[in-house]
Length: 156
Image (cartoon, rainbow, N blue to C red):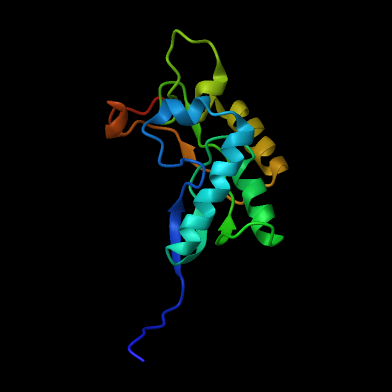
């Protein structure tokens, strides 16, 4: 008596692998094995908060969401029903191209940086091969990058 029952909520913009770190650098530098465990902890937190389904909005590394979804669906870890995403696809200088220009290491980006339509197609095909359910494209700037959305770095 006095309790309320409601259906589970759905989070339509969920980043399981962006894990409450104090900034982007700790997420980028985390080893993939540790990152997988932290991603599964986030899945449990989301479920415990009442969200029984979620749609991945971008993963920090290519297969984190796909593996999380697989383990959740197999009942090996608790988490919401989940549509897996890969890393966001971005252009050079676009939202998601977060690597410092003086460090030539693509692994430091949260996004997969592409230049031109052919690279976009190749990257999308690779993510589909990994098993993602959704693709996130960032082909223009955004206020948080210091470049407005009207300043489109990709026009092809």
